[in-house]
Length: 97
Image 1 (tube, helix red, strand yellow):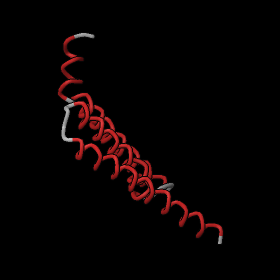
Image 2 (cartoon, one colour):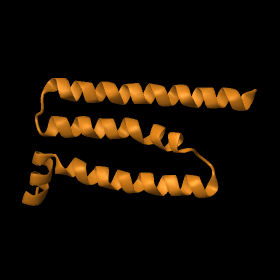
Image 3 (cartoon, helix red, strand yellow):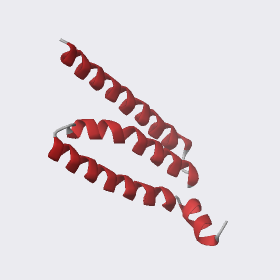
């Protein structure tokens, strides 16, 4: 592996770069949602939040942070995922009524 890639992984900066791309994606989705009215900002947040927490957990593991920090980030990803599922279920229930 080239030295610059090794450095990106060792320092966790690779995840930082990915998170920048995710931020650009969020801005694009928010703009699309606003223009088309097809999804709310909560929909965008629900889609993105679990993945961001998972990426932060990977970064935590890459830099050999405390295991508790990695576990907390994984738990946060799970909680965000459950919240998103609950929000979607409520939304579908309202549409079906």
